[in-house]
Image (cartoon, rainbow, N blue to C red; front, side, top):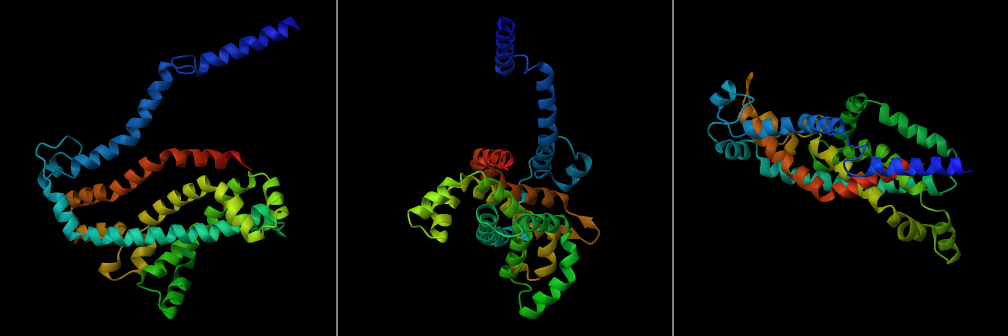
Length: 294
């Protein structure tokens, strides 16, 4: 008995030493790899920033080094030539509509699978997994003909519906992991108090999954913001193009205006970086919570 107690104390002491700053679990070797990973993730961003303020000549002679002269005219030219203001507005409309649509569709589907006695519940989950694994290019031709027939080609609502359909299966599976972890006793208590199924869902269960909805919203929003494939095919009017397609306007024949491309890239990532910095805690905690629940 004494030996077991002593062994238990040793394990607890070793765990405390591993968890404290500078302890056994925080060796210089681990910090070395963290620095390498930080450089691997940050260096491309610094190169993008440096190249966005270089002239075309300096960019060709010094593509990876510090700029000798700051040429801020790239941002003005990129903003005007790429029509980035209108592109940002179109992307804002697309992202907002896509997030709200996915919240509604995926929220109802995830609640049905996670909280209700639905027949073939496992079959629906497997169906969503299969849909996620399929390449979206398979549906391009019939979808284009259908959108042409119903008049949704070259419209932001038509592109928004596509984004909602593409992102809903993944969002449903992710939201389901949050809803499964909520105790079933809350449903029973709400029904005993006379709440309908709609009231139970909207006033009791779904509000508890707010971190999941925020996580889904951020992931879906970034996906819609960066999407290029469907935007180029289904939108033809320059005034309706999202910002992700602005890079196409910086090509002249077989040459690429790399200074303008880098400047437009910086302008494009600023809203994403600001949004992520504001929501990073909720995003990371939401992913961790979702990954721990069945």
